[in-house]
Image (cartoon, rainbow, N blue to C red; front, side, top):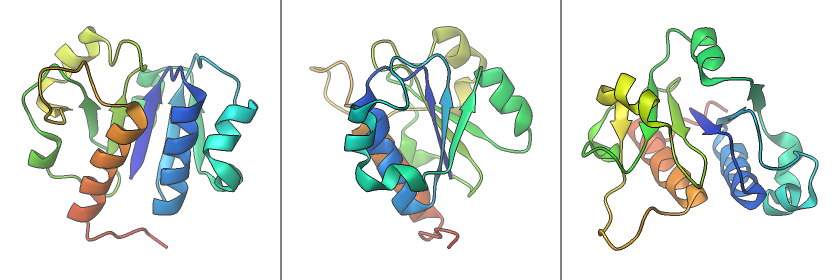
Length: 152
């Protein structure tokens, strides 16, 4: 599986997601610009001693990433759809895309990819779940659907 963070802003979230990626043999793709340096203590502290083991890929744009993986399906996590993350069928080489913490995946990207937009159901009180929690929820559903095949 592949987790994509578009323009991540909070190092602790990226570190936590990186740790989850290492322990599930999932690749982490980061799309620039970042709101922090990958050398910062906070990202390494959140990722603990796992950060050195991460399968990390950096990209200049989502278009560049998608062009490099034309055979893969890209799912876009958003609060702006009704299709639940648990109602789609994930394959092992799929990508799950999360937008910046403060604003999410840009609307123009969501509009171009409506059929692969997914959401995590929640009550209307909050804006959204924490990014690292959301990534873990969707990642583990995709892994469950693939019989937790970690590709070890």
